[in-house]
Image (tube, one colour):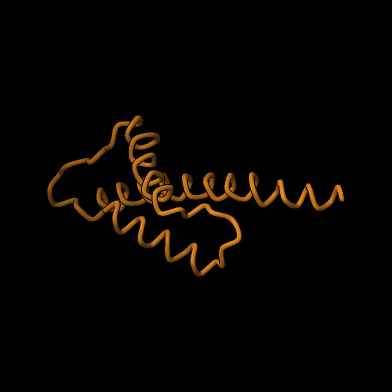
Length: 95
């Protein structure tokens, strides 16, 4: 019976928390990669593009995480295909 409670706690709290952490990291990494690529590819303009750290680490990820939350991406007991589909729709709506 203890194993069942641990498994339920894993499904309810830990899996959504892990998804949240990895999605946050993916968003921040995507931002950083986009800025680096833009600076590398846009050398003809002699401009260096930057995003203030508060935007890069808080506001932009919060914006995208809000769309993930609104589309119920972190509900447990969903097939992985449904989760990927909801993430795609959330990011599409956020852009």
